[in-house]
Image (cartoon, rainbow, N blue to C red; front, top):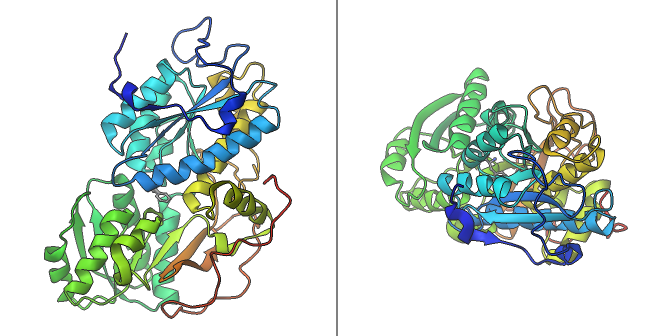
Length: 431
Ligand code: PHE
């Protein structure tokens, strides 16, 4: 009955993985809302909503690359109970309106049995409320704001949350870098930015540091000179900017132009090669926290890195790896579902997940459907982002080996750590 403006954005990916998929159009026979594609035959649909265009396009594009690899591997291994898995991806253009339209369409028109997405917490909050209402499980690969899974029992994620991420960077800033005076600049309409700023400030001040200023900006801003001029007078040793790569790159340029020559610190939202394209030399030397670093490979990720690099001709980013992990987890839950893989049965299987061997760290959900996983800190260098240290959360299973060597405070642009070279190839399948 309803009309969906997102219809025109439909992108049915004709990847190799879909070659296995019979022409779609198999509607569930019975059932109203929430029945999804739990019909007895035909492909099982995973619906993805991602930003493939707009200022956050890189988030969606990388996530999609990881997701497609997971779908290919699953179909090569026989799908789910003999049924192929089909990924239907809609571009939400990075906006809340289109994110809502996309999720509604994935459920009502595409008959998705489960939803994968979004990256940005603000968009996962929009999509998650719809999925919860319709009774279709949603797994966000990489939204870190606490509120996302608080929506309800149909919403999961495969990444750590911002209270941990903020603590990681606040501790790194104080203990590893010795900073005691930091200014914070956040995107005031971005749930992720607000939450990450809050947890950073809490830990940093608790540990005896001083927040010399709390400034704000809006997505799309390119001129930060008013805020930075204020901060310049306050003797800050670093700026904490929990934002997304486009604005952070521009802010770095602004700060150097104004003669504010202190390092920037940030979170996972920095992750994109575009950060260095935009920020240039002005962002080099800065640090951010993330979920995965290809130059910090362990046994498990080595095989994945090789497979992914072969498929996409570039090493996987954290977003790509989480896109892979979230999609692989959904497929695993479809296989574990009791009886027919209906949305409700898949949800139950997701909730029962125990030590799922995700590349970014084993996934077992706590009572709020959040996994407990390690974080890494990276430094932006002229040749790419380099692994600095890995931090285990309190109470985490010692899944990943400790980093090879303890890491001292890092001078800008440590040369020769060879991040781009993929480690020796493993034997193919990642799990
Ligand atoms: N954690 C960010 C958010 O919740 C999204 C993100 C994750 C961006 C990982 C880049 C890399 O909005």
